[in-house]
Length: 61
Image (tube, rainbow, N blue to C red):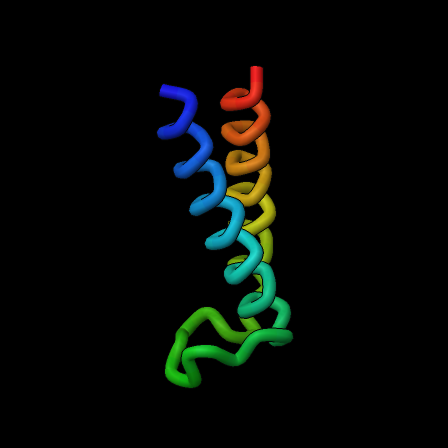
């Protein structure tokens, strides 16, 4: 169970950071993404990254 929480947490964290980068326009990959320069996706990324950090923290307890 711990390994599953860790893997899910890492995936959520990585995806959240990507969404933050795309939403703020710092990451323009892939070029055809509808999320680039759409600030609401940065907000969604913060939420998802936070969930990822919580899952990682729970996996270490």
